[in-house]
Image 1 (spheres, rainbow, N blue to C red):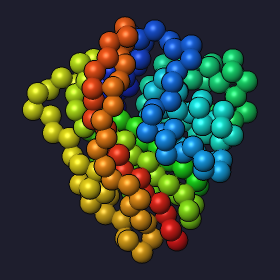
Image 2: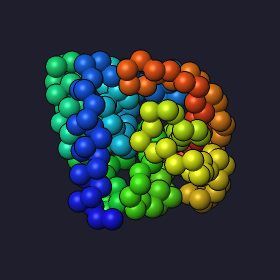
Image 3: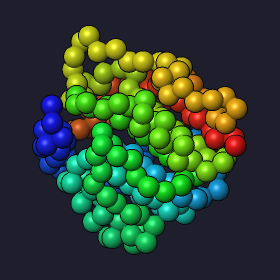
Length: 208
């Protein structure tokens, strides 16, 4: 499938959802980042912008990218209305073809899943190399299918955090896996529907 197909698909996903006035950050982000000193962050696949806005509110300078122009434009408008546009930079970016420039203290990739071609291992490896020493890469993947997910394939397989780390294949002398687990939580989806879901959490720190 082409990049045009991917853009059309994700623009459609976001356009079909009402624009969020106050999007919430992902739980795994807040539990990992709370207490860390603010720096430069990169949000890969920013979606409705809850993570980027929360980070900016904590004092981080955030570069937020998404393949969907709808998502990026909505986030830019929210940052302006929240007085956070000096800390949030948005850009439409297709990770299938390139990776954002810069060096970062935190890079987060929440639920970076797509039905289109995307070499995730290469994207996440590029992210690890874009970290400053001491910086962290947080990868949170689906470990189960929520009732409201766009992907309801009953045969879908969810690689474990350790499998994801093995696929990225980073030298242990430079990067350390700080966390690799599969916690459960009660999530709330569109329309207030709730369900128990499993997250696959991988946290990698650049040590040198």
